[in-house]
Image 1 (cartoon, one colour):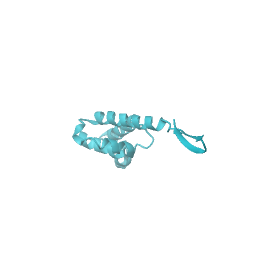
Image 2: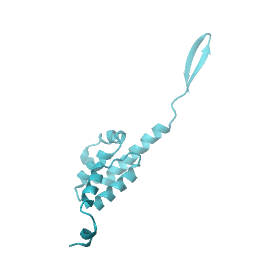
Image 3: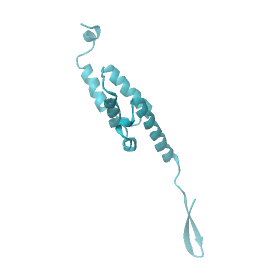
Image 4: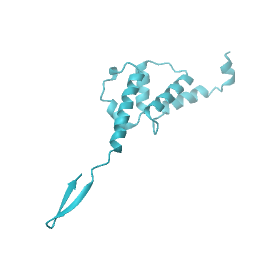
Length: 119
């Protein structure tokens, strides 16, 4: 009997698989999310095809990123690293859009009428 079987509780693998299945990106950046997924897969000793790993990874991404990467054909990505690079670029684009301030609206009174000017 392997040493780890004697010292690891029987429910450990089941719990790791459950964590892997339910894991979501939430407030992690894409790279941190990838590292967490890889760690859980190593601990749970999950070996799967790259397509399945990409699918698992994609299902846990934040919805804004998921919607944008779904525009690419599934066979476009050869491995998880390619997919993560795209997700990181999408994440950066989304962050840059949220940091841009919306145009300010100024009201200017011209001859009794109020005119709105965008800056």
